[in-house]
Image 1 (cartoon, rainbow, N blue to C red):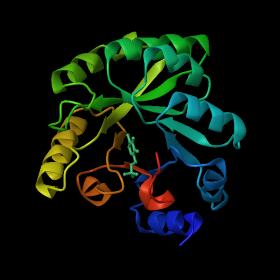
Image 2: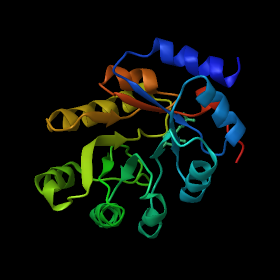
Image 3: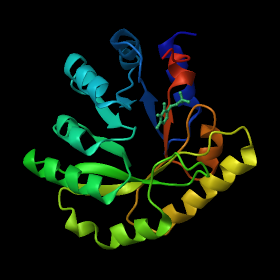
Image 4: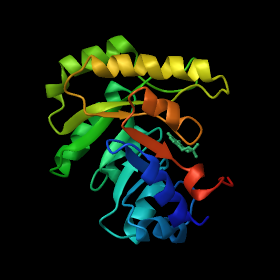
Length: 212
Ligand SMILES: *Cc1c(COP(=O)(O)O)cnc(C)c1O
């Protein structure tokens, strides 16, 4: 199957409330256009420079999501156009996004990344930090915190992944202002949806394996 057939087949099988972010990192602009021309407009990247280049070269009605770890000194490059930042993983980063959003006269949508995986390498807030930030969310006037993002452990053990999704779902449900729960990648998106995910980030099932 080609890219447009793959993306359309996946979208047909998704529940209506689930938004698909097509993760196009390392993929060419031609490959992105194949997905775009089949009617898909939401793409995710994990590197600032690649995101900016693709934004500049591709159609302006694409909604670009930053899904990777974001360094504070690079927020300024994406602040003018990014439509959702998934990986907000520290208060310092949140403050910088707020500052750059203000300079651009924008309100930037953000998800708080939650540390759900057992691996210590994954970034994110703890449960108590999430609660604390949400109590003070009005301090960040130019940021709209619309929900949570999580990445499960890199493992084949389904029960471990499901445990992590379940704990993220619980945190999500505790905050009635949240609308977006971003969890699930190519290998685990079906269980993520069972645990309440309404935004999935799929790369390899759409575009094929990445060659780094
Ligand atoms: C690369 C990436 C994805 C997509 O991974 P696939 O397994 O190819 O679907 C999703 N989320 C994040 C944060 C990523 O970096």
